[in-house]
Length: 177
Image (cartoon, rainbow, N blue to C red; front, side, top):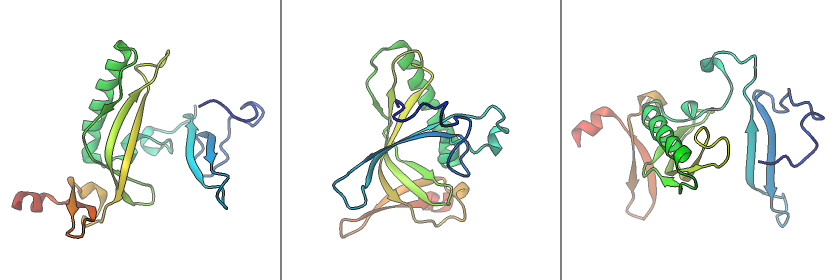
């Protein structure tokens, strides 16, 4: 993300303009000027961990560990680390489809299923230490479990009319199938 506006030093780089997210440093928005409200069609956000950051568990810094359902975190972490290692040793590594659906929870306690997850390498000196994670094909997940921590598996349910929705499956109902 290249800076599109005045230099960061003139805009007070040590401060975020968004309350509650002090790590947010820059936002670039691609807007469609042909719509009445100038719809945002693409957004890039840049965050920087603060030097006086509290321990990770108390930090407001966005992270994949905070976004994914806890049961999915070890698997995703391992796949991303393995891809980053390959990217370091293989210039121009093609994107990799993880062939999994990933439940993501948002701070407002909504649960969304990303039906496609892909990894894309970056080039340059940060190759191997940073990886793009792409999430697409979102659908809302209806909650049957009491909390996101109770969810062990998410499955798609195809309805007779052609509709698809995702539903959590508890350990008990998985054992019964």
